[in-house]
Image (cartoon, rainbow, N blue to C red; front, top):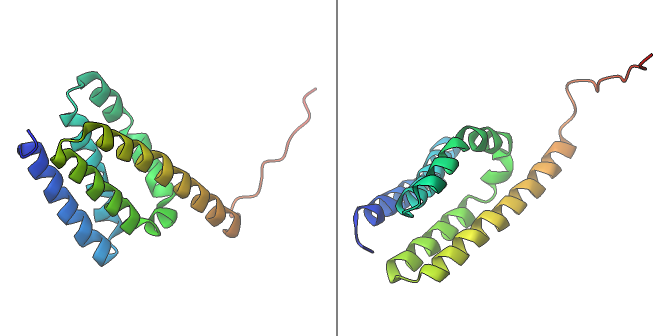
Length: 136
C-alpha cells in the first residue's frame, strides 16, 4: 500500500537525508542514500533483483567513496530526485516512479562520473606511472 511500512521508512530516510544535506554530512548522506535505494529494491517484490543489488553494495560503496567530492556538489539534487520518486509512489503512479528512478540513476551517475573526471585531472598524481618493460 502507498501508506504502508515501506513508505514510512522511505519518508524517515528522506528526513535524515535532508538533515545530512543541511549539515553537509557526507557520511550520513551516503548511508541514507543507500538506505533509500535498499528500501526501494526491498519493496519492489523482486527478491532476485534485490539479491543482485545487495551483492553490489560493497562495490557501490567503494565507488561512492572514490567520487564523494563530486557527489558532494549534487546533494540537493539527489535529495530532490528521491523526493519526487516518493511522491510518485505515494500517488500510485508506478510508471512515473520508474521513469524518475531510472533518470535519477542515469543522470546523477553521469554527473558524478563527469565531476570525478574533472577532479582527477586537477589532482596531482602521487604515484609515478608504471614503466613498461620490454618482453624478450
